[in-house]
Image (cartoon, rainbow, N blue to C red):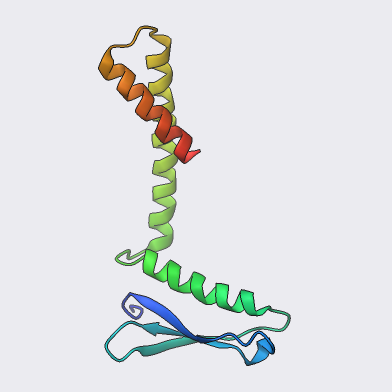
Length: 120
């Protein structure tokens, strides 16, 4: 069974004066938007939480578009990211230990340092 195609969006209103009246509708973006689900507040939720939950659901569904098994794929990508970072750090340390850099090594070292800093 497949879920409703992406992209999804949400619409509706968050009633900041009475959170229990808030209701956000998740929609499939077609010419005539089709309702998919409602996000309604549970006891004790703030209006901000209701809206954040709707946004989170929509963002996650849209980010996983095209993935048959998103949990497995994301886990795999995280593992690859960690392994690539480890290899990149190793490459940087090998270049650094070599002392004098050729121009291409210097560029590789600098690029590796930038990527490591961004990932960490």
